[in-house]
Image (cartoon, rainbow, N blue to C red):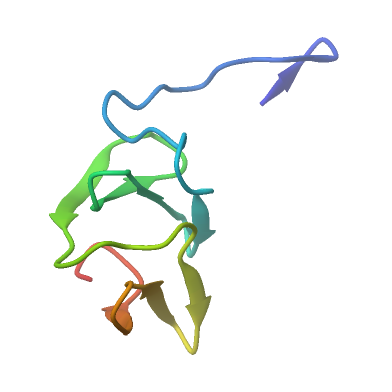
Length: 88
């Protein structure tokens, strides 16, 4: 958010840290993938955690969204986490 021409912090996430992969935003949700393969889904407006899910396998960086699904690249194979949203 910008106020008086300067950026303002609206919320901070305690465990959703993007030092490993870029966050992905879709349909009002932000997805953060940690280096420990934990996917964090947060509401973009409030920062409230919708869910956290540990993924099975070693993920490559930055997931992508295609056909309404969040997709990850494991070392062994690509994986689709299902449709985007709080019920992924």
